[in-house]
Image (cartoon, rainbow, N blue to C red; front, side, top):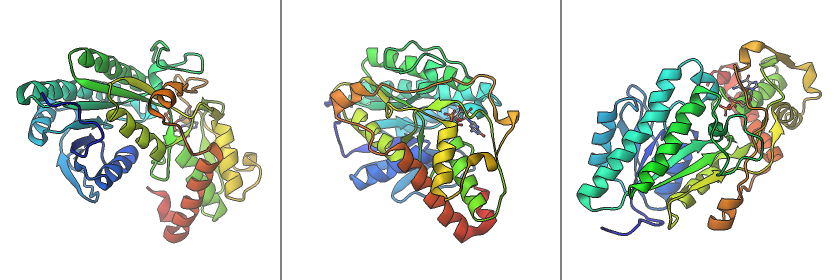
Length: 331
Ligand code: GDP
């Protein structure tokens, strides 16, 4: 059998390629000379420079097995699935299928390919801080998994499966990602909702912003940094699990304050309204990751501060809405 792929370049299969992380990852991989196959949902279209797009449903395990066999990747990055904790309460069963079970089908297919072709296949699972539920902060690789949302349950199952397939000889790793944001974050997530909202108020398109739980503390990082961490994990000599986080937590209220300040708006109380519709049945009070293992073993650390994340997103959204007018709010 060939040795581990290491830093490549080779052939990568990326699920969720049209999402925030997938699109940054595909750009990074193609820049480094990788051939990138990207999986997107049937009926959706997406064109990423240099990415070979395949349509398949994550709920269809036969389709996933065929895709792995046909593309014969050196590395699979599994970033697809339902990615919103809030939305997972609306679709718990679909979340279990596409976020929990699909990674198992992909790892099984990868192991079969490895065994039949005698070619090493690596697997990266985008795991999530939600596997820890409301465990006291800081959360590390050894924090017990006690999920409190359908999304957390699905991610927890997939996370456990990574260790199982690794024990069977698949070079499977998990990056346990804490919240990570960017200008590509959809507004169904709180940071983008806030930065678009602040920009809309600044430009006179809106007068208020309606949110849910402002007291939740999250470890907000910068998505492109986190994609660098994924690349480091997938090319590490030994497959393993790593927390990807900044180590600092801020409340949703603090993010709103930072965003509104960047937009040149005053007190957030003048613009914010709280509506229970945006609160969750269960919401972890504080998520803050201990990322010392990835710093020590792979030399990765977050580069972008909380204030810079809010500022970059607001600057982008002011420009975006300035160009597109109020229609720019329906992303
Ligand atoms: P996720 O929980 O990792 O999927 O990320 P979100 O950005 O959706 O939520 C982060 C935190 O913001 C959670 O604690 C939410 O309860 C809180 N939050 C407060 N108001 C809102 C809101 O209007 N929308 C969303 N999505 N989250 C909100």
